[in-house]
Amino acid sequence: MRMNNQRYDLLKDLFQGRRFFKLVCGAGNEDLTEVRRLATIYTIAGVSMHDLSANPEVVEAAKRGIERAYELAPLLNKKIEMRPYLNVSIGLKGDPHVRKATIDRDACVKCGECINACRQNAITDDCSVTEFKCIGCGDCEKVCPSDAIRYTHKRADFENILPECAKRGVETMELHAVTADDEAVMHDWMLLNKIITDNFISVCLDRSLLSNRHLIERIKGLYGITGERMIVQADGVPMSGEGDDYNTTLQAVACADVVMKSGIPVVVLLSGGTNGKTGLLARQCGVNAHGVAVGSFARKIVKRYIVMEDFDSNVDMVREAVSIAEGLVKSNLEAICG
Ligand code: SF4
Ligand code: SF4
Image (cartoon, rainbow, N blue to C red; front, side, top):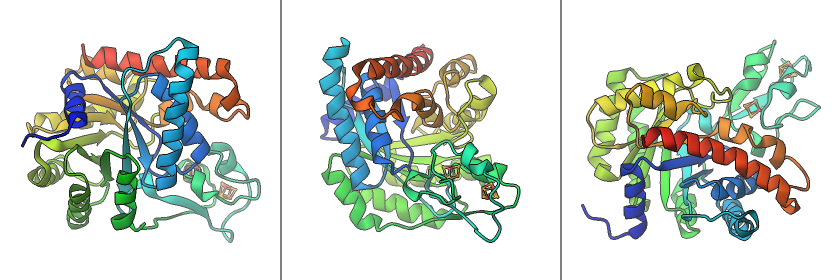
């Protein structure tokens, strides 16, 4: 089907040319300051898309960050080649991207290990979780000696929230579908298809709960609804990409390989454990994915800048952060477009 949408055509070109890079701010990341600053840095660094929590306030924060990027780019002698797409992500119950940690006060022994482990600074000195900062990564659970970490998943009113996000400029949407429940996946997939009719829709999948065969069967079912507008974000190990080595990114490349070998003509993105080595490993393995989505690692390498109080007024600080972010974007794109 031919889409009457120039932005769809542009996105399709980026995929075909393997020139697509997505910054994942985090499906559960509702820290408005962090999202705004990430949007500024990575817009100047040349990303194609910002992936955001499905929350209109988060969308507005990202838009402010992009506007700031356009103001700052000339001061940094940079040219922004294209306005990045805004994508929002929703997740099904059980998917780690959309859960929030809480601490069971009866079980907690106040050792403080989780405070040090939390990459989002979401745990306060009195051992409680600041919900809007939590991205559900599970790092706190890994270090907790007394099994005191619990998770909650709040199903938001997506029937109203998603159209509101679209009104505010969101062009594509994504479903995080790490669940064995095919019916629930199809229900939410239909919802996204109803809202986004003339652009791409993405499903983020990994193999933690699905066999390779189940993964492909699910993709086939969703492709039957969406056709050529479908993106599969093939997650290796979600939110694991803090290290910059080949092993960390191995599963991201492996999962994309499984999807590409199925022959279903979807767009395939490398994700979940992606870092500065992902594009190169994919190329060496002959996995010709259409793009790369980077979250944890992309956020980590600029974290020391975006937590600074004077970030918004300090152009030299932005320049340094952009230079680091550009390295990540360029190394991946140069590798995957070969
Ligand atoms: S470590 Fe991860 S899951 Fe735990 S509170 Fe921090 S962001 Fe949330
Ligand atoms: S690591 Fe566990 S026991 Fe220690 S402070 Fe955190 S929640 Fe409490």
